[in-house]
Length: 268
Image 1: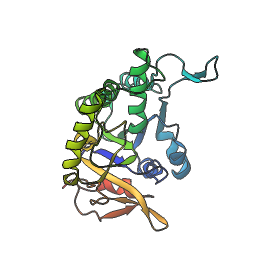
Image 2 (image 1 turned 90 degrees about the vertical axis):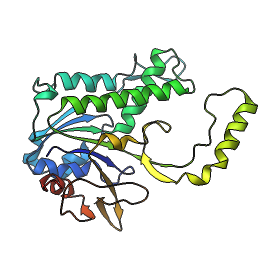
Image 3 (image 1 turned 90 degrees about the horizontal axis):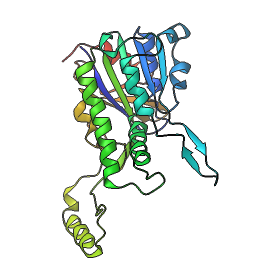
Image 4 (image 1 turned 180 degrees about the horizontal axis):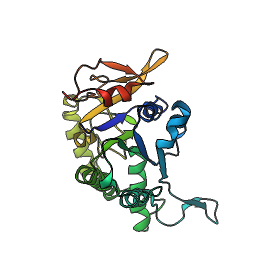
């Protein structure tokens, strides 16, 4: 079976390093690097396995302006770089539609991908450095959603997106409404129903955009610390509805070989 996995966890929980076991199991990792954080894979994979790791840096260029403030050097283009890589992968010229069941496309991370998409929308609309508006969050939501929809229709290989987590509860904001009285009334109404909205951990993108990102994947794994060890959880915990559609796996796996065990298990 082909896996589509959303891998979530807090920073430095072991999410990226967990992918090293896939290289050692013989898979090719095509890694879209939005975080410049490929080093854990390189550190934990066997040296001979690294030949199966191909990295495309999806980074936004920045510069220091005359007043000492950081500015983007043109419109942020990390997402554009990722899309171009799917059309023609730099190391071998292949199209993503040609990859098979020994290939794994990785986005690390979807959190930074969304941030870049929002920044790009703000720069293109001459709003760099200003407070994001609803339309900016919507643009980030649409960009990442369209990317995920593209992978569903295009890929014949495995797909993993890594994201960070944030604590999500009742939305008590009034959005971009400038009328103070109306904004106060909206918040009052939201407070009335706040107790009906459970607090949970959700994929971190921008604002509350894509908190339901898991609907685009066949499985969710939650990477976290269990005492001194890092584990991959395959059962719901902390409000994360973790689980993968394969049989016979325990509730938690070691980070060092857990992803390889998931990929090697039979479909449920």
